[in-house]
Image (tube, rainbow, N blue to C red; front, side, top):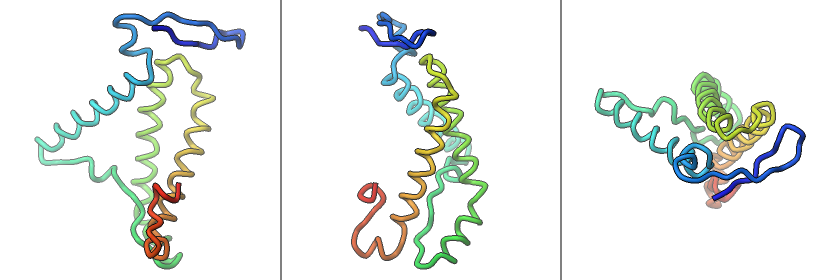
Length: 138
């Protein structure tokens, strides 16, 4: 197997990744490691009577902006921690893959904010009336 990497001069070079190197030099494997890590952490928390539920926050159903604002204010810390958690996890993976964090972080911020707005729109009562769930809104 091989992958294409950007060199320091801005050009692209083919980099051979065979054998055990593929386990940390490919995006597919990082997805597996991150998912497996979440399962293990979730199990360990469960075995000790805790869970990841606090981190898994989504907007509540809302009918007007005052309801939405109250819910967002109530969970602001949870959203911030969720953002920092995923930023740290994905930054570690991106760094291991050899990409620059200064390029990744603004793109991640945009995607996180955009996906958050999609979830907010999908939780609107009127959107629910027409089955406009977040995946469909996206």
